[in-house]
Each structure stands twice: as structure tokens, then as C-alpha cells.
Length: 115
Image 1 (cartoon, one colour):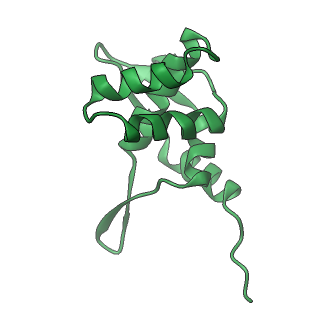
Image 2 (tube, rainbow, N blue to C red; image 1 turned 30 degrees about the vertical axis):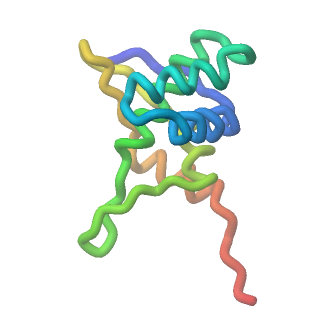
């Protein structure tokens, strides 16, 4: 069993993701962009948790009708902020429990209207 990764605020995940997307490409550059954007307001432990949670989120795809899709929307960020995440192995592999992640994401998704 690995070490649990702390929960973070969904808004921080969204902002960290935007900072990573706006900065130079590459994992190390993304990490630097996230630290630059958030380090004045969050702890080092939160920065680490944000990084792991975004890493797990970026690796999450769903297979629908034989095609792979990435589910990155507000509900996904909210689910990623709180879904149990465990750090395993020497290289820090992280992965969400798919069923729990999907359950959380669906609970945060707004029901579609009919009109």
C-alpha cells in the first residue's frame, strides 16, 4: 500500500492546470509554472499534492464506443481535487480509482436540461 495524497481545493487544480498549459511544454516546465503561479499562497505540501493530482488526471482517459477520451472539465477538476489518490512505487506512480473518480465527477456534473 502506498501513501495517500492530500486533498486540495478544486480551484487550485484548475489554476495550476492553466498555469501549466500557458507555460513552456514539458513536465519540468509545467511544474515550474505551477510553482510560480501558486507558491505565494499555498504550502509546499499542497504544491506537491496539486502536482500529483494533475499528473493522475492527465493520465485518466475513458474508453467510449471504442475511442479514448480525456475528461477534463470543471466536474473532473472537482473530482480530482478530492478523489482518493495513492502514491506508489519508487517513481511516484499515481492513479485514481476509476470507479470512484467517475462517481465523483458525475456527482459534480450539472444535470442536462431538456429545454
